[in-house]
Image (cartoon, rainbow, N blue to C red; front, side, top):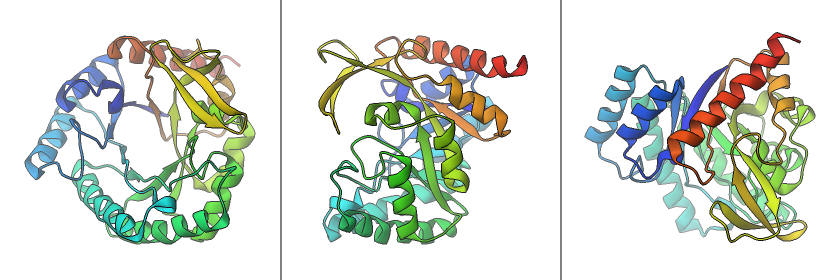
Length: 287
């Protein structure tokens, strides 16, 4: 498998600085966060070409663009149309940058609060995203994310069924997000998503009593308002070993993006997480 750094972990730096640090840390690629100062639908064409040239110079692949557009399920029709237009622009950037996947968000609310019409509306617009993406040979990816329609494997499968069987749209498995939701994120979750599982995000987090320290936040879950702390991999409550055991078991040769946002200097935290991942994968070579 190949490892990418999430450029959002370096959001206080320019995308050029983020790329250089990513290479220095030994990553294979960089997943670009589609918000400034890194990339957005409004980024100029010369800047996008400059990013591609630097990535090639450094020998970094760009497997995916992490878009923030969409949120169709609760948006008005005019907002949805604008979101689709933004997605079209990201597809153009993906083609130039050599990215095979572009993320889009289906929207909220939390899956346990959502009604069928939320899924139906999201599916309607996501079908259009898929049709647009086909022209660029790009896959549409949706992140299994807390505070969204797809917080669990079951909710993800419900949405994909409404979209209709299509090999061009699938999911990002994120064990950290699924821990927050309090749903299974282990071996069964990977196997159950099957052909619709395209990508992986990795970060660690834990529940805490108060959300006042740096790196902490509050989320609404099925248990109510809960507090969480972002951590270095292995220092939180998310057990990623079964995930990497399963990826090794099935011979996964795709991408895993590390996106640590723990309250440490960006280069230090990303270095620590990459080293931890290598240890978890190496364990399988001796089993």
